[in-house]
Length: 382
Image 1 (cartoon, one colour):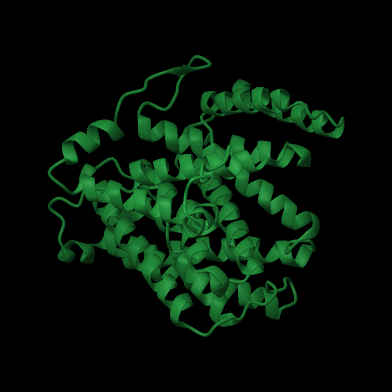
Image 2: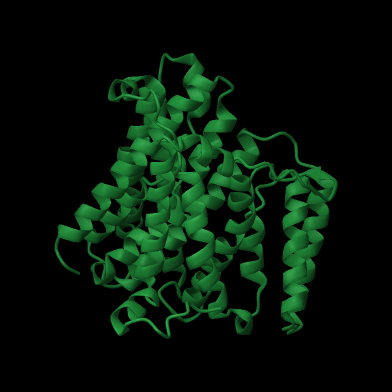
């Protein structure tokens, strides 16, 4: 699948086929969703976003709305594409040595610990806020990617790979936090079956099976078993990306993700209503803790841990990446949207606290995106 550009002007055709074209599609869809959610048509938008799609998955209730199906279902394709790109970089690219792989992992760990500490410090004394400590720990790869693509040559290729690897590690660690601190006990038989399917896919790859139907059916089954087990189902995309043979990594997947999955995801997920919200509400403990966790804790944790690891010789900085560029990318790590919103819904039972946390997430993510873009756009060139 490719974008049909045969009859378009050459410049427009080149733009649509470039990474920046897909980034603009995601950003425009996100702005449209946010605008509709805060417009006179908010009711119609909400009805579409929350359109009920209650389907059983292997005997368990699956995602129950259109938004949930996109976030927990189609986004598995996004993580699949990211893992395939990272695998290529590990094979013969910017992550081809252990110190280069260690850097995004260490940065992700720092980017989880420091925001959580910032939140706990800001909300100390507010007993009802304690459960939200994990809300600002996440980095949303779906929204950091288009921003660095729009920046073009101001972000070195190795730095872009570092940020994507960090975001994937961040998501995996975030999912682990959800499983340990915010979930009930998993369905162990389903989890065991998922492990068996995964082992079968690994065996198929080692046996040099290249039939895409094998991995497609295995991926769908693995996704269903993750839902049945109570595990974040987008992990299936990560697992399939690790198992898929290199010859099956086709450009068609990138086209589907870039022009279908990500714009739909942005349109449905960024539509957070700010009705009744005002700036004074950000000074309450929960939204302020989330805001500062994302805007201050994330860049301090990611940048500090990465530089410390490099100075101690535990990892090496990406090629052609200055500390100025690294800090700008660390600012973008404060864009925590999907996983943060999900954790907020799990952490609090009081709708008022959930709404306050969402306000902090939206404000913090917007500040992080704008500050990171300005830092990299108008700072020194690579």
